[in-house]
Image (cartoon, rainbow, N blue to C red; front, side, top):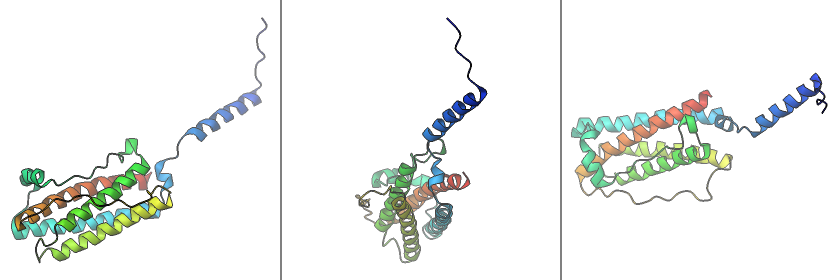
Length: 200
């Protein structure tokens, strides 16, 4: 059997380019390429603002009521049923853009509800709590609008589930410490994810 004729260099180059183009076509876009830089920078600014609000709430609870260590209130957290907001779709190694934005929005919505449940915590903390709720609502709106722009938003916004029932002034104050601590951890993760996307 005679050997097959060798391909010309020009044809080899053409086939190589064709194969490379096919691979590039099949490779998903970097998630960051779907998000405007202006959106990411605005989100980072809003996260920093909310972190400042949360820190102010923690400082006032510590100074006024000597509730300074959330780790001392772990048993109360379980009895009150204060939930965590996950960001499992947001690790940079396995980022799922739709899931990550959805979890960011859902988490902010959850913390809005938890902070509303703390209303009446004390006259001194009321203004700080109000500012925190407003800034979280603004951030949630920013995320939702971007989801709508990308065609990722669900048909209906989420509805708030059952919130913990704080039946005493102490429970509200201790709940404030725990909610603020959970919120800060959530925001730290969110900030790292958003900064990673902004730098990609």
